Length: 163
Image 1 (spheres, rainbow, N blue to C red):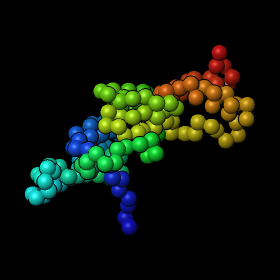
Image 2: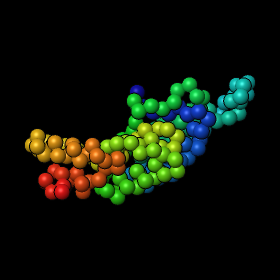
Image 3: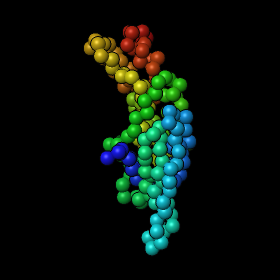
């Protein structure tokens, strides 16, 4: 086995979603690109000739966007994490993915305009090894109030300067 490929099930908008994700992640290391498209064969009823799958890569990770119909919508049980090195990256991915119809959730989670769930989070741990239970409690209390992660607010809570 050479690698795993994540398959995302869409209800007819796989091509639009793949194009969108490529545009969002173009600047990540390894880039983002469409690598192939397949269509439903003739004789597939209402799907005949329409896009079946779009193959794409984001940062070297392979994905398939599948037009499978309405049977299996996305749920919060599956999400992808975007590890961000700084607040600028957090702001970019958060603002882009909730823009144009996405929905913010809590603690860095959001749902994009296609209903897929993302976690826009710091690349490093939020709870650092060696921090005391009191520090972790302050950081956790600050985190629970956030939708988009605010690194400065987390650090202020960590140092006790969160007034």
